[in-house]
Amino acid sequence: MSEQTLQYFLSSGQIQEKDAASVEWYHAANSNSKITEALKSPAHMIEADILLRGSDPKEPIMAHPPQTDSDITFRDWLKEVTGSVKGVKLDFKR
Image 1 (cartoon, rainbow, N blue to C red):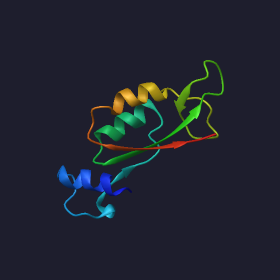
Image 2 (cartoon, rainbow, N blue to C red):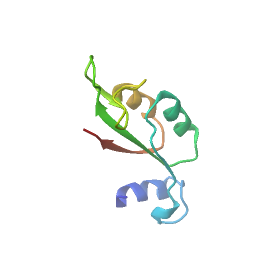
Image 3 (tube, one colour):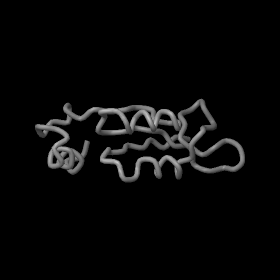
């Protein structure tokens, strides 16, 4: 975790000490229901996976192989997290 990310959570009062172990994560927020759950959770950071949809329209979606489709595009996923106080870690998949 970067120094800047840790400092953000510390200065905003979300963690009490400068210790990355204090930061809670929500992993694999790759669907509409999972991102909704992640945003309501106490997690500080949301991790998700991006890949190019395997069928038309070929666009970035939130999915982890072997999945090739999703109910949420990367664009819509970003709209959901924008404005939240949570950090984001994105894994780009092939």
